[in-house]
Figure (cartoon, rainbow, N blue to C red):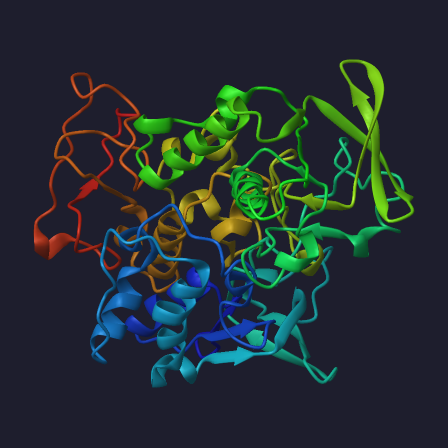
Length: 456
């Protein structure tokens, strides 16, 4: 087992960070990316500008590897698009000789199990190697053994359906090819598809808001186009977010812009609207459902589904997992990320302990680790893999030392964005770690503190 690699599934920011941390500790990981290149999911939304700046989007171990080759960090406060994140960070990182040697692109992991053990078999299960079934781009299959598995495959490729009950609305699967799931590039590749047309956008998160604002901009050239915003709920104050008080300025501005657009009558709102049917009406699509207890229909030439995403758990069907029954995250993590209680600004840092599964040495990390919760930030994923890699390498002190980055000394915060989780006057003052004691994975731009046990 000690001679086998740690397998990483997914070549996005968090998967690459896991590989970098393993390489720093002298390990030889294997990273499997289903797409033709690392960052394939990121490139799907490459036209979208992130609301978290560069300083929160670059993992420290990745940065050290890159800077050793002459790479220079982009301006810390700059806001990259997905394409810029790929071009200036993920691609250069993947092209480093040490990283290139461990990355296998065009290799989709279809199932994970234990050698000679199905889900029911006990025996020496914990000492049996993991077996990963790999599907190559040419359709051929292979198996790879590993001593541990870090699943960073994300959730972007499994978008939520339109149906109000969590399942596809009646008729949705048949009409799926006419519905866009995700964030279309309305300034580029998808401009002509939506130009001058009536469009319905379904969803209440940042993906929906980005899409709506781009549609409003596009309508400047096509004033007769109509835009309808459909949401399951009707709490617009929550949708608008923190505004000027948001710790991530760009995120706050996004909420303020859509609020101004709504108040100016730039779009119609149907909320709360529970979608039950999707139907074809010639060149138009019709949503049928209920609003305020009454039957209602909405029709448009195009429908864009921005209803979030969920994890694909099919590849772990032969593993023993303990998942929260609602979020589908690790059970111990669920109370920390539940969107009914938290935003991404109030999620405490967490690591190996919260992500541990009954299946020894198997971890789900990154966006996928949050299950159906939409509160994930990349910096949180970087701390997850730093802690997990430390544990897999036997450095339990570093694994347990999950960290906070505080913009101001003495203020207890719950994430890397600087949101307070308890008043400074009541918070235990965190102890600043001497430089010699700062574990692998810290950032140069902000001081690092241990989390006081009685705070937050």
